[in-house]
Image 1 (cartoon, helix red, strand yellow):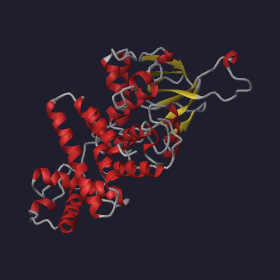
Image 2 (tube, helix red, strand yellow):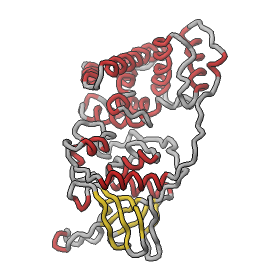
Image 3 (cartoon, helix red, strand yellow):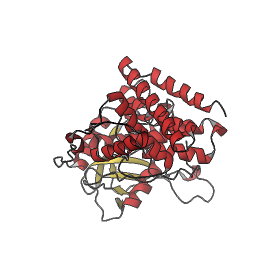
Image 4 (cartoon, one colour):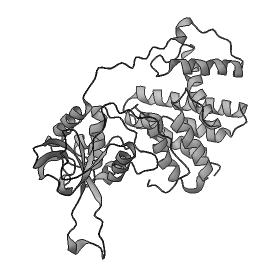
Length: 369
């Protein structure tokens, strides 16, 4: 157990070595190691375990560096780190995993207060950037500039630092204003474009590798082969602006159909299929596939919800749908089906939907790696 920090360093070193350019490799190494060192400093000062703090610093941005995707990178880095820690077996207790993953999960939420190790990582993230840049005017691109400034002022007192804050440091420069976009129409447009391209579920198809890049484990493209209908929908949602993390609460990842149905029911976006229900363009459709009687288990009555696609058009008798992994043939495509056939229901995401930082219970170890 004594070498677990070294094992994490080896993992991070390997991750950064595989980045595509010297500039990216240098940036990742500098930031991850710098934040980790600041975590150690703050943990020692606050009477916390420096090793756990150091590990959270090393892993806190691994998703962003591995995939190049910044949106919700704190939550997705925690999900990626969860797999890393699990694969290290008994090196970490459940409580230690919770501490590390919670810190990573919350580190972008600078305006709120969480656990002691969470706060160490948030402050270390800011402190490292200050030490590298040499200026208290930090990161005007961040969603809450004022929260960053207030944290740095507290660190200034805690560490006995001496510097002045220019007036512009207090400005809130992030503009959230955006023109209205019909995201459901855009969702259908994206799905139609990708499905028409006949993407093949293979590492040899760049389009497939592009739409599975969210799942950062090297094995993910192979594991999703012949089962990437939900991954297709997730990618289309990301492209259309319906931005979601990899996992909702303690569900399976959005690469699986079950996460979509449970999320839709919880958010109120689920519409049960009924004879008088007519789907709309941009709805996400959920299927219960028909299992031949001879293939059913003895006494099996429930047919699983195991396929998903995106509605393009409905004429009242049939609907046209864009799908990944059409009919389990490992290829994307567009097809027409009779209305209501094998249909569980639809997910109609509101155009105003915005991810609202769901909390995550890291004490639950029952979900899949």
